[in-house]
Length: 349
Ligand code: NAP
Ligand code: ZN
Image (cartoon, rainbow, N blue to C red; front, side, top):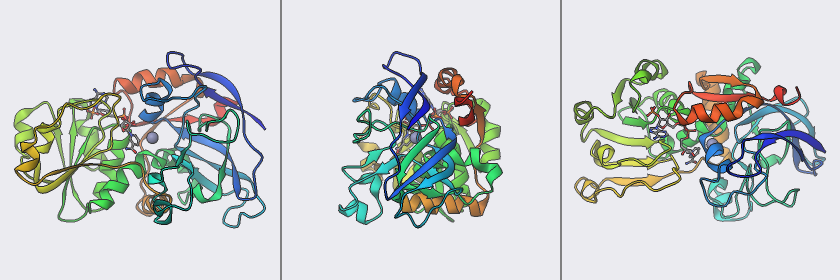
C-alpha cells in the first residue's frame, strides 16, 4: 500500500515528500494510522549522515502515536480504533537472552523503526514521518492518556523512555540527588520523570534563558554549567547524572559533581567523541561512566503507564510536515520548547 511520507535522498539534501510502500498486515501485525510523530535529535543525526551507515532514502521518526486501523488474524491484544504508540523498535530476534529479558533494545538483531534491514521495500525500515506504519504486535505500546493529550504523548516513545530507563536502572528516587544535563527533548523529560520518582533534581544547562522553564518542569535547582562557582557548589554531591547533550563536551566538570560511587550515564550520542575524561576523576571517588540506549518494550509500557498515572506528557510545539527542515535548524540552535511534534494530518494536505 502506498502512503505519503517525508524523507531525504542524501545526507546533504533537505527532507521532501516521498511516496513509500507499507506491507499488508501479516498474522501478527498491527497497522496504525499515524496521528503525530515527535522529532528527535537522533532523526537529524541519522538523516544527515552524521552517524555511520545511513541508508537512503531515509524517512526518520520514532516517536509515533496513532490509532490502530487493522490487525492480523492472530493479534489478540489490539483492535481497530485503539490508541497506540510505536517507539524506536519495530522488531528483534525474540529468542536471545536480551529479548527474553524484555530488553529488545539490546538485542543484536534489534530492528530500529528507521534505517534497519527489512524484507519490506526498499530493504530498510522507514519511520514515522509518514501516514501509516505496520508493526509486529510485540512492539506496539498501549496509550492510556486521554486522547486530547495524544500529540504530547508522542515524545514519550523515545525521549521519555531514554531518560526513564537509566533513572530506574540507577534507582533515582527519594533520598537521591539526580542531575539532568542538557534541557532539550530528552532532558526536559528527564527532569519531569526524576521529579515524579521522588528524587532531588538538579538541571544543568548551557542556556541561562532556560532557568525558569527548568524550574517549572520540576527541577529543584538549576545550574548554568558555564558558571564555575555554581558548578563548584554541587561538587561531590550527586548520586546520578543523566547526560543528554547532543555534542562533544568536557565530561570532567560533570564527573567532579558525583559523590563517591556516583554514576554519569551518557545518553546523548554526538557524531564525534567527547574529549577523554581525566581518569583521576573516576579513580578518586570510584565514580563510573555508563551508557544507556532507549529501553525495552515492557519498560516502555511501564513508562507510558507511569506517565499516564502521574499526568506527565512532553512540552511540545506542533509543526506541519513541511516545516521539518526549519525545525531541524531550530533544534540545532536549542530553539525548541521542548519537542517538535509533527501533525501527521498535514502530510495529506
Ligand atoms: P535536543 O532536543 O537537541 O537537546 C539537546 C540539548 O543538549 C540542547 O537542548 C542543549 O541543552 C544541550 N546542548 C548543549 N550544548 C549543545 C551543543 N553544542 N549542541 C547541541 N546540544 C547542546 O536533543 P535530544 O533529542 O534531547 O537528543 C539528545 C541526544 O540524545 C542526541 O545526541 C540524540 O541522538 C541522543 N539520543 C540518544 C538516545 C539513546 O537511546 N541513548 C535516544 C534518543 C536520543 P541546554 O540548552 O540546556 O544546554
Ligand atoms: Zn529518539
